[in-house]
Image: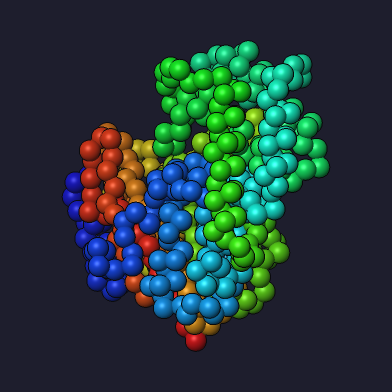
Length: 447
Protein backbone atom coordinates (compact mmCIF):
# COMPACT_ATOMS: atom_id res chain seq x y z
CA UNK A 1 0.00 0.00 0.00
CA UNK A 2 2.80 2.43 0.92
CA UNK A 3 4.55 1.92 -2.41
CA UNK A 4 1.39 2.38 -4.48
CA UNK A 5 0.45 5.48 -2.45
CA UNK A 6 3.90 6.93 -3.19
CA UNK A 7 3.33 6.21 -6.87
CA UNK A 8 -0.04 7.96 -6.73
CA UNK A 9 1.34 11.07 -5.02
CA UNK A 10 4.13 11.11 -7.60
CA UNK A 11 1.50 11.11 -10.36
CA UNK A 12 -0.28 14.00 -8.65
CA UNK A 13 2.98 15.98 -8.47
CA UNK A 14 3.67 15.35 -12.15
CA UNK A 15 0.27 16.72 -13.08
CA UNK A 16 0.68 19.66 -10.71
CA UNK A 17 3.79 20.73 -12.62
CA UNK A 18 1.53 21.53 -15.57
CA UNK A 19 -0.74 23.75 -13.44
CA UNK A 20 -0.36 27.23 -11.90
CA UNK A 21 -0.46 26.18 -8.22
CA UNK A 22 -0.41 29.14 -5.83
CA UNK A 23 0.30 28.87 -2.10
CA UNK A 24 -1.62 31.70 -0.49
CA UNK A 25 0.00 34.26 1.77
CA UNK A 26 -1.23 37.21 3.81
CA UNK A 27 -0.34 39.73 1.10
CA UNK A 28 -2.98 38.75 -1.46
CA UNK A 29 -6.76 39.06 -1.67
CA UNK A 30 -7.20 35.30 -1.10
CA UNK A 31 -6.79 33.89 2.42
CA UNK A 32 -7.49 30.58 4.15
CA UNK A 33 -10.59 31.87 5.95
CA UNK A 34 -12.43 32.22 2.64
CA UNK A 35 -13.10 28.49 2.37
CA UNK A 36 -14.86 28.10 5.73
CA UNK A 37 -18.29 29.14 7.00
CA UNK A 38 -16.99 29.81 10.51
CA UNK A 39 -17.04 33.60 10.51
CA UNK A 40 -20.52 33.69 8.96
CA UNK A 41 -21.96 32.34 12.21
CA UNK A 42 -21.29 35.65 13.94
CA UNK A 43 -22.01 37.97 11.03
CA UNK A 44 -24.32 40.91 11.66
CA UNK A 45 -26.45 40.06 8.63
CA UNK A 46 -28.57 37.20 7.29
CA UNK A 47 -25.53 34.98 6.67
CA UNK A 48 -25.78 34.09 10.37
CA UNK A 49 -29.41 32.92 10.23
CA UNK A 50 -28.56 29.26 9.70
CA UNK A 51 -25.25 27.52 10.32
CA UNK A 52 -24.10 25.61 7.24
CA UNK A 53 -20.79 24.16 8.36
CA UNK A 54 -19.93 22.89 4.86
CA UNK A 55 -20.17 26.38 3.33
CA UNK A 56 -17.62 29.07 2.60
CA UNK A 57 -17.15 32.65 3.75
CA UNK A 58 -19.38 35.59 2.89
CA UNK A 59 -16.12 37.39 1.99
CA UNK A 60 -15.30 35.00 -0.85
CA UNK A 61 -17.28 36.76 -3.56
CA UNK A 62 -15.75 40.22 -3.05
CA UNK A 63 -12.27 38.70 -2.74
CA UNK A 64 -12.73 36.93 -6.08
CA UNK A 65 -14.09 40.03 -7.79
CA UNK A 66 -10.88 41.78 -6.72
CA UNK A 67 -8.61 38.87 -7.66
CA UNK A 68 -10.22 38.57 -11.11
CA UNK A 69 -9.96 42.34 -11.75
CA UNK A 70 -13.66 42.68 -12.49
CA UNK A 71 -14.41 46.41 -12.65
CA UNK A 72 -16.55 47.83 -9.87
CA UNK A 73 -19.81 49.14 -11.32
CA UNK A 74 -19.68 46.81 -14.31
CA UNK A 75 -22.90 44.78 -14.75
CA UNK A 76 -22.18 41.11 -14.02
CA UNK A 77 -24.45 38.08 -14.37
CA UNK A 78 -23.49 35.51 -11.74
CA UNK A 79 -24.38 31.82 -11.37
CA UNK A 80 -23.93 29.48 -8.39
CA UNK A 81 -24.96 25.97 -9.57
CA UNK A 82 -24.50 24.50 -6.06
CA UNK A 83 -26.21 27.27 -4.12
CA UNK A 84 -26.52 25.59 -0.71
CA UNK A 85 -27.93 28.09 1.80
CA UNK A 86 -27.22 30.99 -0.54
CA UNK A 87 -23.88 32.40 0.64
CA UNK A 88 -22.83 33.48 -2.86
CA UNK A 89 -26.30 34.82 -3.63
CA UNK A 90 -26.69 36.84 -0.44
CA UNK A 91 -23.16 38.22 -0.82
CA UNK A 92 -24.04 39.27 -4.37
CA UNK A 93 -27.29 40.85 -3.23
CA UNK A 94 -25.55 42.94 -0.56
CA UNK A 95 -22.59 43.87 -2.79
CA UNK A 96 -24.64 46.70 -4.34
CA UNK A 97 -23.78 48.80 -1.29
CA UNK A 98 -20.10 48.60 -2.35
CA UNK A 99 -20.92 49.56 -5.92
CA UNK A 100 -21.07 46.13 -7.53
CA UNK A 101 -23.91 45.60 -10.02
CA UNK A 102 -24.61 41.89 -9.90
CA UNK A 103 -27.57 39.82 -11.08
CA UNK A 104 -27.27 36.45 -9.35
CA UNK A 105 -29.07 33.15 -9.67
CA UNK A 106 -28.42 29.89 -7.83
CA UNK A 107 -29.49 26.27 -8.35
CA UNK A 108 -30.05 23.91 -5.41
CA UNK A 109 -31.31 20.33 -5.28
CA UNK A 110 -31.88 19.96 -1.52
CA UNK A 111 -35.30 21.49 -0.74
CA UNK A 112 -34.43 22.54 2.81
CA UNK A 113 -31.18 24.25 1.81
CA UNK A 114 -33.02 25.98 -1.03
CA UNK A 115 -35.67 27.18 1.44
CA UNK A 116 -32.95 28.54 3.75
CA UNK A 117 -31.42 30.47 0.85
CA UNK A 118 -34.81 31.91 -0.15
CA UNK A 119 -35.63 32.95 3.41
CA UNK A 120 -32.32 34.79 3.73
CA UNK A 121 -32.56 36.50 0.35
CA UNK A 122 -36.04 37.80 1.22
CA UNK A 123 -34.78 39.67 4.31
CA UNK A 124 -35.48 43.08 2.73
CA UNK A 125 -39.15 42.19 2.11
CA UNK A 126 -39.93 41.39 5.75
CA UNK A 127 -41.84 43.84 7.92
CA UNK A 128 -40.14 43.95 11.37
CA UNK A 129 -43.35 45.13 13.05
CA UNK A 130 -45.26 42.28 11.47
CA UNK A 131 -42.58 39.85 12.68
CA UNK A 132 -42.94 41.12 16.24
CA UNK A 133 -46.70 40.61 16.11
CA UNK A 134 -46.29 37.08 14.76
CA UNK A 135 -43.63 36.25 17.35
CA UNK A 136 -45.98 37.24 20.17
CA UNK A 137 -48.80 35.21 18.63
CA UNK A 138 -46.64 32.10 18.29
CA UNK A 139 -45.00 32.30 21.71
CA UNK A 140 -48.03 33.33 23.76
CA UNK A 141 -49.82 30.35 25.23
CA UNK A 142 -47.08 27.94 24.15
CA UNK A 143 -47.15 25.47 21.30
CA UNK A 144 -50.30 24.12 19.73
CA UNK A 145 -51.14 20.67 21.02
CA UNK A 146 -49.80 18.36 18.36
CA UNK A 147 -52.03 15.35 17.76
CA UNK A 148 -50.85 14.37 14.30
CA UNK A 149 -48.64 11.42 13.40
CA UNK A 150 -44.97 11.66 14.27
CA UNK A 151 -42.50 11.80 11.37
CA UNK A 152 -41.78 8.38 9.93
CA UNK A 153 -38.04 8.69 10.28
CA UNK A 154 -36.67 6.55 13.11
CA UNK A 155 -34.04 9.11 14.13
CA UNK A 156 -36.73 11.54 15.24
CA UNK A 157 -38.49 8.83 17.23
CA UNK A 158 -35.32 8.06 19.16
CA UNK A 159 -35.70 9.45 22.69
CA UNK A 160 -31.98 10.23 22.75
CA UNK A 161 -32.55 12.66 19.88
CA UNK A 162 -35.81 14.21 21.13
CA UNK A 163 -37.84 13.24 24.16
CA UNK A 164 -41.33 12.42 22.82
CA UNK A 165 -42.82 15.39 24.68
CA UNK A 166 -40.22 17.77 23.26
CA UNK A 167 -40.74 16.39 19.76
CA UNK A 168 -44.50 17.01 19.98
CA UNK A 169 -43.85 20.47 21.42
CA UNK A 170 -41.60 21.37 18.49
CA UNK A 171 -44.09 20.04 15.96
CA UNK A 172 -46.76 22.05 17.75
CA UNK A 173 -44.72 25.23 17.36
CA UNK A 174 -44.09 24.43 13.70
CA UNK A 175 -47.81 24.06 13.03
CA UNK A 176 -48.59 27.17 15.05
CA UNK A 177 -46.14 29.18 12.95
CA UNK A 178 -47.87 27.96 9.82
CA UNK A 179 -51.28 28.75 11.27
CA UNK A 180 -50.60 32.30 12.48
CA UNK A 181 -48.38 33.25 9.53
CA UNK A 182 -50.62 31.88 6.79
CA UNK A 183 -49.91 33.61 3.46
CA UNK A 184 -47.40 35.88 5.19
CA UNK A 185 -43.91 36.39 3.76
CA UNK A 186 -42.67 36.62 7.32
CA UNK A 187 -43.63 32.98 7.82
CA UNK A 188 -40.39 32.01 6.05
CA UNK A 189 -38.44 34.10 8.54
CA UNK A 190 -40.10 32.31 11.46
CA UNK A 191 -39.66 28.84 9.97
CA UNK A 192 -35.97 29.40 9.24
CA UNK A 193 -35.50 30.50 12.85
CA UNK A 194 -37.35 27.35 13.91
CA UNK A 195 -34.99 25.25 11.78
CA UNK A 196 -32.05 27.02 13.36
CA UNK A 197 -32.87 25.84 16.89
CA UNK A 198 -33.64 22.20 16.08
CA UNK A 199 -30.09 20.93 16.49
CA UNK A 200 -29.45 22.81 19.73
CA UNK A 201 -32.62 21.42 21.26
CA UNK A 202 -31.76 17.85 20.28
CA UNK A 203 -29.43 15.23 21.67
CA UNK A 204 -27.24 15.22 18.55
CA UNK A 205 -24.94 17.50 16.63
CA UNK A 206 -23.74 17.53 13.04
CA UNK A 207 -20.29 16.02 12.87
CA UNK A 208 -18.79 15.28 9.48
CA UNK A 209 -20.89 12.74 7.66
CA UNK A 210 -23.19 11.88 10.56
CA UNK A 211 -25.16 13.07 13.57
CA UNK A 212 -23.37 12.35 16.85
CA UNK A 213 -25.03 11.95 20.21
CA UNK A 214 -24.10 14.66 22.71
CA UNK A 215 -25.02 15.54 26.27
CA UNK A 216 -26.47 19.03 26.50
CA UNK A 217 -27.26 20.73 29.79
CA UNK A 218 -29.28 23.89 30.34
CA UNK A 219 -30.27 24.01 26.69
CA UNK A 220 -33.45 25.88 27.53
CA UNK A 221 -36.98 25.29 26.36
CA UNK A 222 -38.18 25.48 22.76
CA UNK A 223 -39.99 28.72 23.59
CA UNK A 224 -36.81 30.29 25.00
CA UNK A 225 -34.72 29.10 22.06
CA UNK A 226 -37.20 30.43 19.49
CA UNK A 227 -37.49 33.81 21.19
CA UNK A 228 -33.70 34.18 21.34
CA UNK A 229 -33.15 33.11 17.73
CA UNK A 230 -35.93 35.27 16.28
CA UNK A 231 -34.78 38.28 18.32
CA UNK A 232 -31.23 37.91 16.99
CA UNK A 233 -32.48 37.57 13.42
CA UNK A 234 -34.75 40.58 13.84
CA UNK A 235 -31.82 42.64 15.05
CA UNK A 236 -29.85 41.82 11.92
CA UNK A 237 -32.75 42.98 9.75
CA UNK A 238 -32.65 46.38 11.43
CA UNK A 239 -28.88 46.60 10.88
CA UNK A 240 -29.16 45.50 7.25
CA UNK A 241 -31.95 47.96 6.49
CA UNK A 242 -29.77 50.79 7.77
CA UNK A 243 -26.72 49.61 5.84
CA UNK A 244 -28.19 48.40 2.53
CA UNK A 245 -30.64 50.88 1.04
CA UNK A 246 -30.51 49.23 -2.40
CA UNK A 247 -29.73 45.58 -3.15
CA UNK A 248 -28.88 43.57 -6.24
CA UNK A 249 -31.25 40.99 -7.70
CA UNK A 250 -30.60 37.46 -6.43
CA UNK A 251 -32.72 34.33 -6.55
CA UNK A 252 -32.48 30.57 -6.11
CA UNK A 253 -34.29 27.94 -8.16
CA UNK A 254 -34.90 24.22 -7.80
CA UNK A 255 -32.68 22.13 -9.98
CA UNK A 256 -29.64 19.93 -10.51
CA UNK A 257 -26.22 21.40 -11.32
CA UNK A 258 -25.67 18.51 -13.75
CA UNK A 259 -28.57 19.69 -15.94
CA UNK A 260 -28.85 23.48 -15.90
CA UNK A 261 -31.22 23.55 -18.87
CA UNK A 262 -33.76 21.44 -16.98
CA UNK A 263 -33.54 23.97 -14.13
CA UNK A 264 -34.43 26.71 -16.59
CA UNK A 265 -31.17 28.51 -15.92
CA UNK A 266 -29.29 30.30 -18.63
CA UNK A 267 -29.02 30.04 -22.34
CA UNK A 268 -25.79 29.80 -24.27
CA UNK A 269 -23.09 32.23 -23.03
CA UNK A 270 -25.38 34.09 -20.66
CA UNK A 271 -23.24 34.42 -17.50
CA UNK A 272 -20.11 36.46 -16.86
CA UNK A 273 -19.07 34.65 -13.69
CA UNK A 274 -19.72 31.29 -12.03
CA UNK A 275 -18.78 30.67 -8.38
CA UNK A 276 -19.58 27.52 -6.44
CA UNK A 277 -18.47 24.79 -4.11
CA UNK A 278 -19.70 21.29 -5.03
CA UNK A 279 -20.04 18.47 -2.52
CA UNK A 280 -16.56 17.19 -1.78
CA UNK A 281 -15.64 13.59 -2.59
CA UNK A 282 -15.61 12.72 1.12
CA UNK A 283 -18.59 10.38 1.68
CA UNK A 284 -20.71 13.17 3.22
CA UNK A 285 -24.38 12.88 2.29
CA UNK A 286 -25.97 16.29 2.93
CA UNK A 287 -29.42 14.73 2.78
CA UNK A 288 -28.42 12.64 5.79
CA UNK A 289 -26.66 15.50 7.62
CA UNK A 290 -29.69 17.79 7.32
CA UNK A 291 -32.31 15.09 7.76
CA UNK A 292 -33.74 16.60 10.96
CA UNK A 293 -34.51 19.87 9.19
CA UNK A 294 -35.85 18.07 6.10
CA UNK A 295 -38.26 15.94 8.13
CA UNK A 296 -39.25 18.45 10.81
CA UNK A 297 -40.17 21.11 8.25
CA UNK A 298 -41.99 18.58 6.09
CA UNK A 299 -39.78 18.76 3.00
CA UNK A 300 -39.76 14.97 3.05
CA UNK A 301 -42.62 12.98 4.59
CA UNK A 302 -41.91 9.37 3.63
CA UNK A 303 -38.93 7.07 3.48
CA UNK A 304 -39.36 6.79 -0.28
CA UNK A 305 -39.08 10.56 -0.71
CA UNK A 306 -36.02 10.69 1.53
CA UNK A 307 -34.36 7.76 -0.24
CA UNK A 308 -35.00 9.26 -3.68
CA UNK A 309 -33.54 12.61 -2.61
CA UNK A 310 -30.39 10.88 -1.38
CA UNK A 311 -30.05 8.85 -4.56
CA UNK A 312 -30.56 11.86 -6.83
CA UNK A 313 -27.69 13.92 -5.41
CA UNK A 314 -24.15 14.25 -6.73
CA UNK A 315 -22.18 11.00 -6.45
CA UNK A 316 -19.99 12.17 -3.56
CA UNK A 317 -21.26 9.51 -1.14
CA UNK A 318 -22.25 5.83 -1.26
CA UNK A 319 -25.99 6.59 -1.00
CA UNK A 320 -26.11 8.35 -4.37
CA UNK A 321 -27.21 6.69 -7.59
CA UNK A 322 -24.09 5.80 -9.59
CA UNK A 323 -23.97 5.68 -13.35
CA UNK A 324 -23.06 2.19 -14.57
CA UNK A 325 -19.28 2.03 -14.78
CA UNK A 326 -19.28 0.08 -18.04
CA UNK A 327 -21.46 2.69 -19.76
CA UNK A 328 -19.49 5.77 -18.64
CA UNK A 329 -16.69 7.12 -20.81
CA UNK A 330 -14.32 9.64 -19.30
CA UNK A 331 -11.54 11.62 -21.00
CA UNK A 332 -8.36 9.52 -21.10
CA UNK A 333 -6.43 11.93 -18.86
CA UNK A 334 -9.12 11.78 -16.17
CA UNK A 335 -9.48 8.01 -16.46
CA UNK A 336 -5.72 7.68 -16.17
CA UNK A 337 -5.66 9.41 -12.80
CA UNK A 338 -8.57 7.30 -11.56
CA UNK A 339 -6.72 4.16 -12.65
CA UNK A 340 -3.71 5.29 -10.62
CA UNK A 341 -5.98 5.88 -7.64
CA UNK A 342 -7.43 2.39 -8.08
CA UNK A 343 -3.95 0.87 -8.10
CA UNK A 344 -3.21 2.51 -4.73
CA UNK A 345 -6.03 0.58 -3.05
CA UNK A 346 -6.00 -3.02 -1.98
CA UNK A 347 -8.60 -4.89 -3.99
CA UNK A 348 -10.63 -5.77 -0.91
CA UNK A 349 -13.57 -3.44 -0.70
CA UNK A 350 -12.32 -1.13 -3.43
CA UNK A 351 -14.95 -1.87 -6.05
CA UNK A 352 -17.68 0.31 -4.51
CA UNK A 353 -15.19 3.12 -3.83
CA UNK A 354 -13.96 2.93 -7.39
CA UNK A 355 -17.50 3.20 -8.70
CA UNK A 356 -18.08 6.27 -6.52
CA UNK A 357 -14.87 7.99 -7.66
CA UNK A 358 -15.72 7.38 -11.31
CA UNK A 359 -19.34 8.45 -10.85
CA UNK A 360 -18.21 11.65 -9.10
CA UNK A 361 -15.80 12.42 -11.94
CA UNK A 362 -18.58 11.85 -14.46
CA UNK A 363 -21.05 14.01 -12.53
CA UNK A 364 -18.55 16.87 -12.24
CA UNK A 365 -17.74 16.51 -15.93
CA UNK A 366 -21.45 16.90 -16.76
CA UNK A 367 -21.72 19.92 -14.45
CA UNK A 368 -18.65 21.56 -16.00
CA UNK A 369 -19.98 21.00 -19.52
CA UNK A 370 -23.15 22.86 -18.55
CA UNK A 371 -21.15 25.65 -16.95
CA UNK A 372 -18.94 26.00 -20.03
CA UNK A 373 -22.02 26.31 -22.22
CA UNK A 374 -23.72 29.08 -20.22
CA UNK A 375 -20.53 31.07 -19.52
CA UNK A 376 -19.60 33.91 -21.85
CA UNK A 377 -16.32 33.82 -23.72
CA UNK A 378 -13.68 35.32 -21.49
CA UNK A 379 -15.87 34.61 -18.45
CA UNK A 380 -14.53 33.17 -15.21
CA UNK A 381 -15.53 30.02 -13.35
CA UNK A 382 -14.42 29.49 -9.73
CA UNK A 383 -14.70 26.18 -7.86
CA UNK A 384 -13.93 25.71 -4.16
CA UNK A 385 -13.24 22.06 -3.43
CA UNK A 386 -11.55 19.88 -0.83
CA UNK A 387 -9.52 16.69 -1.13
CA UNK A 388 -9.90 13.62 1.07
CA UNK A 389 -8.34 10.40 2.30
CA UNK A 390 -10.00 7.05 1.70
CA UNK A 391 -9.17 3.54 2.82
CA UNK A 392 -9.26 1.19 5.76
CA UNK A 393 -6.80 -0.74 7.86
CA UNK A 394 -4.51 -1.23 4.87
CA UNK A 395 -3.79 2.49 4.83
CA UNK A 396 -5.26 5.76 3.65
CA UNK A 397 -5.09 6.91 0.05
CA UNK A 398 -5.35 10.61 -0.92
CA UNK A 399 -7.92 11.45 -3.58
CA UNK A 400 -6.98 14.85 -5.05
CA UNK A 401 -10.41 16.07 -6.04
CA UNK A 402 -9.05 19.50 -6.99
CA UNK A 403 -6.84 17.86 -9.62
CA UNK A 404 -9.71 15.66 -10.85
CA UNK A 405 -11.89 18.76 -11.27
CA UNK A 406 -9.06 20.56 -13.06
CA UNK A 407 -8.65 17.65 -15.50
CA UNK A 408 -12.39 17.54 -16.13
CA UNK A 409 -12.49 21.32 -16.65
CA UNK A 410 -9.62 21.21 -19.15
CA UNK A 411 -11.30 18.40 -21.06
CA UNK A 412 -14.43 20.52 -21.70
CA UNK A 413 -12.40 23.56 -22.81
CA UNK A 414 -11.63 25.60 -19.67
CA UNK A 415 -8.24 27.16 -19.11
CA UNK A 416 -6.91 26.79 -15.56
CA UNK A 417 -5.62 30.24 -14.57
CA UNK A 418 -4.70 29.57 -10.94
CA UNK A 419 -5.26 26.98 -8.25
CA UNK A 420 -4.97 28.50 -4.80
CA UNK A 421 -4.13 26.03 -2.06
CA UNK A 422 -6.21 27.67 0.66
CA UNK A 423 -5.39 25.42 3.59
CA UNK A 424 -4.28 21.94 4.57
CA UNK A 425 -6.79 19.79 6.43
CA UNK A 426 -6.41 17.89 9.68
CA UNK A 427 -8.05 14.61 10.58
CA UNK A 428 -8.92 13.20 13.98
CA UNK A 429 -6.91 10.06 13.24
CA UNK A 430 -3.87 12.25 12.45
CA UNK A 431 -3.47 10.66 9.03
CA UNK A 432 -2.00 13.20 6.65
CA UNK A 433 -0.93 13.81 3.08
CA UNK A 434 0.42 16.87 1.26
CA UNK A 435 -2.67 16.54 -0.93
CA UNK A 436 -5.16 16.68 1.94
CA UNK A 437 -6.22 20.28 1.35
CA UNK A 438 -8.90 22.72 0.21
CA UNK A 439 -8.33 24.63 -2.98
CA UNK A 440 -9.85 27.43 -5.02
CA UNK A 441 -9.75 26.77 -8.77
CA UNK A 442 -9.87 29.83 -11.02
CA UNK A 443 -10.84 28.85 -14.57
CA UNK A 444 -11.64 30.80 -17.72
CA UNK A 445 -13.56 30.16 -20.93
CA UNK A 446 -11.23 31.21 -23.77
CA UNK A 447 -12.37 33.91 -26.14
